[in-house]
Image (cartoon, rainbow, N blue to C red; front, side):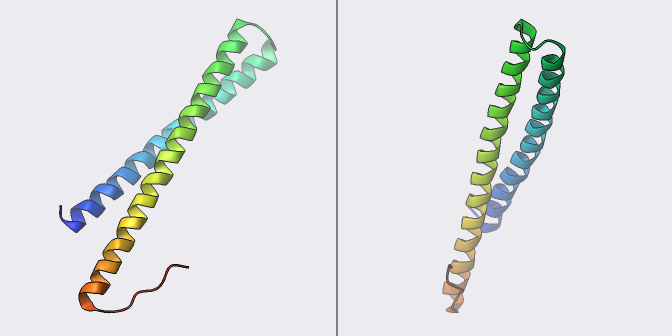
Length: 99
């Protein structure tokens, strides 16, 4: 696979996961508002339990999406470092060392 295609594909993954992360955050905020409203109206009961469950599920989904987004960003950064190192090796120029 071409280097530019690889980097483009990794960047597309990061962008897609960023969109998913934003959507998951909106869902989480909506579920949190619904749970808070329901809890204020009736501190106990099945509707409050359902709202709490929906909030917990949204929080879990957001956390998984956040982790996937961070992993995709790490893969992209790693691939960019590899490309920089390969180019430096090709031209026999030193690169900065990792801190």
